[in-house]
Length: 295
Image (cartoon, rainbow, N blue to C red; front, top):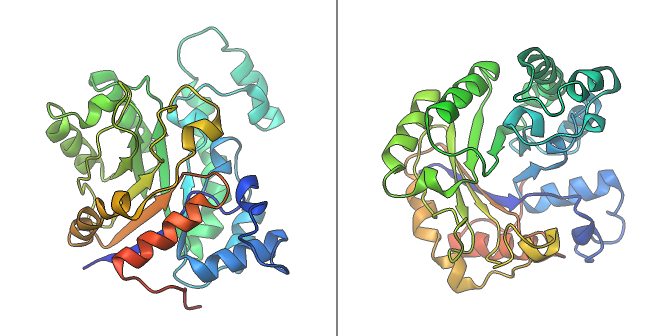
């Protein structure tokens, strides 16, 4: 059986910080991470989707967490084909992006430079053994087909040698007629599939399919079950308190993943108040995992 690690998709979310979950004396930047890492063995870094990381933060994160702790780091938006404001880039790269507004595609040279800076900043984290995986969350516009498959190959080539997990937001990838092809593609690329839990009553709902496409890692992300997915504010989209019955639907799937992958990362993204940490604590209990992290 592989190791199952349960955590949340942020430890710095403002709603979590203001919820009172962090005890007195652990509410500064260092204290929050040290406390979080004493409770959970894995966390997702969301800020790197909005802006490039820094080597300084990688060093601090490694220093403030115990051996064996994992950071799953979201890929920068430009690398996954999302719309990106020039202001999200370092100053010297902004003209290259601004100059392409209204034109199709992104300059491959710019993508290469962004990847180089992104990966170099994370190298200290990887060197310290704290990097779990890079999470490439692709936009809903990336539908199954040859152009999308070619784009995934380009992403894999750019990130050669790095662990990558893929979350698709277009539901077609995991519908019954595409499951086999999607599984084969990710297996060929050595990318871990990200299974998702979300509301299943919308046209944009991604099916809760959980294949293992990489023997090293499987990932499950719980987004909540709000019917405002894709339409409401961030709070509307992710506001959900999981019940034990809802979480129990996933325990046999997670155990099955652990029979096939060396590590399984279970991450809660229902980030309103302390809902994510409470759901993670409940899932940990349902799976019979330790209540605290040794370190």
